[in-house]
Image 1: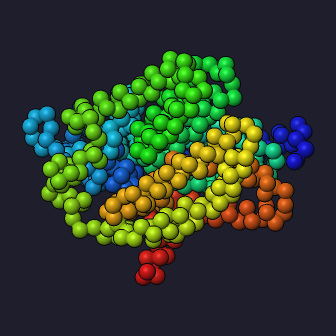
Image 2: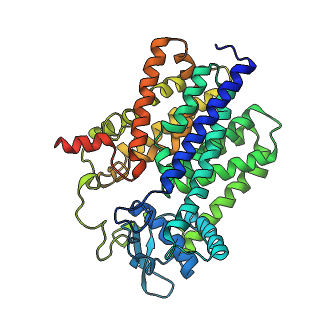
Image 3: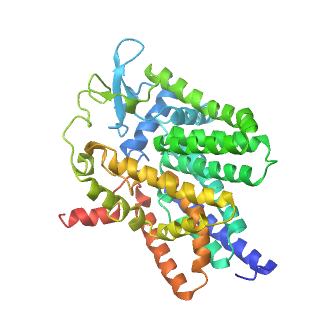
Length: 447
């Protein structure tokens, strides 16, 4: 264990600040320079264009219908559905859940009212301001809170700095700071959920706002990532077991504050309480319309992987591999295992959640999905269905990093793993909606 005197702490804190400032400056710089391939917008894929279309439609036209927005040059997206609107006519809508873009429409409305700028005529300026507010500021808070966690629970200088560096530069969350997406807010809220549960577990006198904040975070995680319903259920059960009365008074109403708007905005947009992805039955298929990408013959990753075994292999250690793209997670798996042996129940909970939810998601997406859905999440820089779990793996990295610090050869290996992870995170900064580098090599080899 390192001698943690005042000078050592001050130096360590200075290193934290430098790492975080560089990470944030890098993110803002990339946001200021990103452009689509056609140079018309700063939107990098059909995925984020779909969300931007809803934001613009709500503020500029007062509707969730994106018929007019999709006609703009550079705005068309394949991530849309078509169904009968309130006027009895067929209209196009974003296929993404409505709550998050509705919230961002509030930002856009303020910007438009104050400056007069709009997303059609001032696309780059308005979009970049929203991206900084929506992505960079929360990412800054995430890095700061993660650093506080590491500083409190880490035991060595090397281990603490290693984990903070990994949070800043070594995960596939970093590229997604540059684009509008659901994975970054889900991951940050998942982290806040875990912090809340651990605070309540360790402090019987935790104030009501901690329960309420945990409820908001857990529910918003689930609103952005379908598999995060598992985290919401697990968190609810844990808090009901720990403090049932205060959970009912503070936590559950906070969950409702997210759940109710989720379903209300969905109903206002689509006339249904079910989000668009739940409308795929042949008798009620909103994805079946003239020119739909989803009914045409699919190629590449969109075609789906016939072999479940091969899909699992590539999702873990292959061209989209959770461990091959971010090999520091091998250390995190070891760290989570050590947490399971700790005396403190809260530490065991963290280890169990890290490994348990990861296993649930892996089994669900690799073993239980039909062939058409075994597509690695489409065109993205990694197996993005697991991105929301990244904060848990960073937290579990702390005990492993402290173990690594005890030996020079362990430190050397760990730094090599971090370098490989940072390489995988740095390559897609031009566009996170691009294939991982091992996949490009795999396709290029003709396999």
